[in-house]
Length: 147
Image (tube, rainbow, N blue to C red; front, side, top):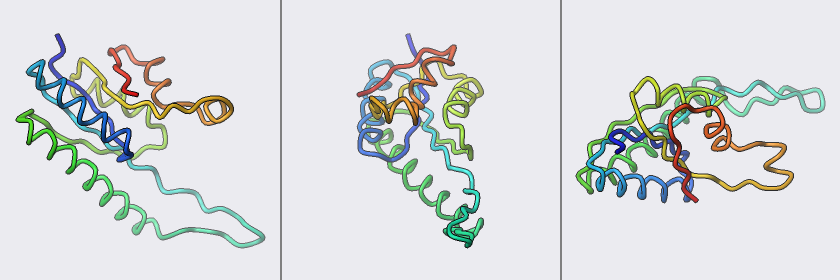
């Protein structure tokens, strides 16, 4: 069956539950896990009433997202370690998460992508779209969606 799961996480409650379930599945399959956190790229400055709005410097933004990645991936690794499941973590920077998820799964040799669906529906789902839906649509690797 599956021997190497890619588990993207954004640190949300649903994503954390998906991490736990993925580790449980990996243990039952004697599989290993690669956790993935995708850091957003530095946002472009926004113009607001004649002023440029930049929330923080590029360096501060990078440091903040790196710390967030370290925290989220550390929690996932801890869950895997407690279950005696072999796991590694990867992080990357991208504003197109679904492409990064698929690319990482291919690069790491994963045979299953196990990810949460945040369940955007209606107008929000139509306008924002779903990264999970995009992964399911574009991936050649099987995708298990946790809800």
